Image (cartoon, rainbow, N blue to C red; front, side):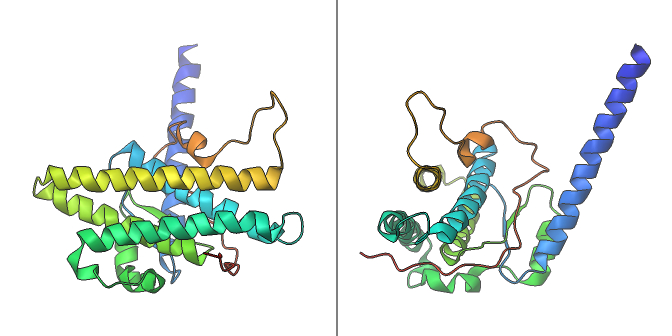
Length: 233
C-alpha cells in the first residue's frame, strides 16, 4: 500500500515536470512569432485569471467571426464587436492618462510597444510569464494594453505608490469584467437561447476559478487572423 502511494507520487511529479517542459517549449516557440505577447500577471491568481480570460475571449471571438452571415446575423454580432471596440478604447484612454510617454499613442500601433524577439526569449524562461498569440487584431490591442498596464502597476509597486496602484487595479478589474461579459454574449450567440433550467456554457472565467496550475498557462492557436468587421458607432 505504501509502495503504491510512493509510485503514485512519483508519477504525479513526473507528469508535473513534463507539463512544465512542454509549456516551456511552447513559449520558446511562441517567442519566435512576431505578434506573440508575453504578459507577467499582476495581482497573483487574479492576474493569471485575466490572461486566461483574454485567451478565452480570443478563441470565442474567432468562432463568432466564422459564423457571422451564416448561422449568426451580422446585426446581432455587431453589438459584440462594438463592445470589444469600446473596451479597447477605454483601456487605452486610461493608459494614456496614467503613462505620460504614451499620451498620444494609437492602439492600432500596439506592435510598437511589444517586446523584441530577444526579450521574448528571456521572458519565455520565466516560469510566471504567460503568452498569447492573438488571432484577432482587437485582441492584440487589448493584450498589449494589459501588458502595459501590468508593467505600470509593477513600477508603482516598486516605489510603494499604493494609491496609484489602487486606481490601476480598478481598471484591471473593469477590463476583466468587460471581457467576461463579452465572452458570455458571444457564447449566447453561438449556442442560441438557453432553455429554462438548462446549464449555460462555461465561460473562460469559470474555468479560471478552478485554480489551474500556473505552469500550464493559456493555450494558444496557430490559426490565421480573420478580419475584424467594422462596428457601427
